[in-house]
Amino acid sequence: MKILVFDTCLDKMYIALAQDNKILTSKIVTNKDNKYHSAFLISTIKEVLKKNNLSPQDLDAIGTDIGPGSFTGIRACTTVARVMAQQLNIKAVGVSSLEILSHIAPKDQNVAVALDARKNAAYFYTNREIKGAVQLEEVEQILQTGEFCLITDDKLQTRLVGTSYQQGNYNLGEILAQLAYEKLKANECKWQELKPLYIQPPPMG
Image 1 (spheres, rainbow, N blue to C red):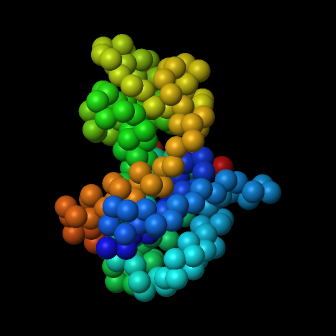
Image 2: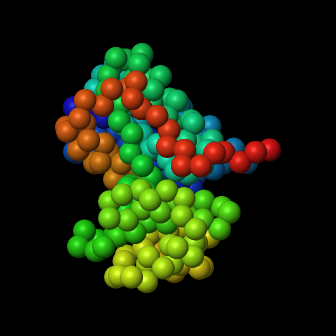
């Protein structure tokens, strides 16, 4: 199964091409010349396919991050994933950025993920479950109840401590590819069911 995955929800764009659970190509793209990295999504997909002498028609499935994260990034990758899967008549699977980031932590750790949701809240994930946008005071109380390996971002690290994914050299595209493969094996993953994960409405203005 050839799987193309991409993520424009977080601070960088991650793209990976896999054959089942084996990574063939992986690429990370940062913002360039005041252009948000999602602007390079289509050109980078073409580049990755060309490098492997493949066309879109050779793909068996698409995987994408569905959020939470940048609203622009969520729209970009879910829209491209749906359109590609529909046109190619192949499967499409979505994975939450919170689940992706939870796999940074060692497997034997009790993991929690907290990303800035503004308004004194965090997108919070623990016990393999998305808790939603949770007030920071409540997040702190939960973290104090047990031994958690916290994955967070630069902004919340100053308050919650933990490990900021933005300061590490983590290839989240490869994690996404592995999670997508596992979900594709277990579920039908119809492209019609792929939807962005908006935990709270986009900011106005």
